[in-house]
Image 1: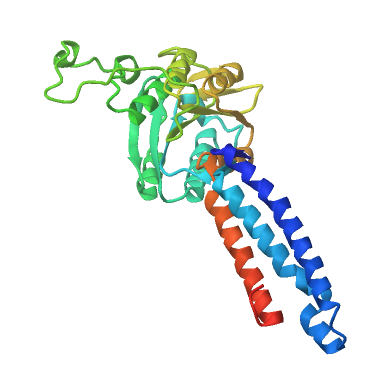
Image 2: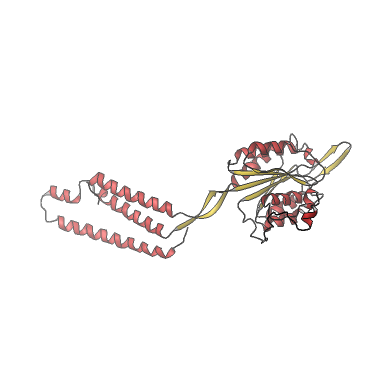
Length: 347
């Protein structure tokens, strides 16, 4: 625990003085009672309750004062709190290798089912977008609060050739920062229009100057990248990860499929596919995120369950003055209430 105004902690030295004052008053009270010979008068002077009851209200009042003095120093603590605003981009591999059946029923079907289960665990105030990538990348669903639209986008996945992991990351960043002026010509497979190449934006706002930030510091958005293979085309995924790191966006990577790989065949051709865990771990490390391995459909669902709880909460140093103030007021009210109940007066 830290304090914004630590100098006010010196006021806690008043508490020992108050304890000494209380003990002095008790001793003086006993000296005043001694001259009375009548036992009834002595009991009345000492209070109608037991001896221990006489000390409870003052002790509670002392605790209340101490708590309020701590509150005046404005204490802070690291707490886990829900994010006020969050956008999650699901960047999912739809390359031909996702038809492999080493993850039942297929890698693609397992990824679709796990992603849809992931949506049900997210709070409704979290926006979700979907980027599909194979040889190129495309936004199949812009960030939205509608879970139905996201599910429909996931169900529309069509398998394609090649794997451009870097394209999926870059397009995810462009979706999070639409006004950042990120070049997508290598990512979508489309050349920029002539007006864009000449720097004409038809009245649209110009991209803001970019300044790198601390990796992992952007708490309002995150990317979940799922793939089952190695990059075969498109931008270097590690360089794309550096782009994300410079913008503070975490890229959580999920590797699906058996580690030894699998051989798939389609329309007369076959190929060996293998998971590139080293690259996925590098992407996660650069962006201050985590890498998860999912060798089965059940593993994949557990990964998404873990992410659903991590991505919508953050640890943050928060001022907790109000909690101390409430506790202090409660202790003071308890002291007054017990004094009235036991002795018929506030003491």
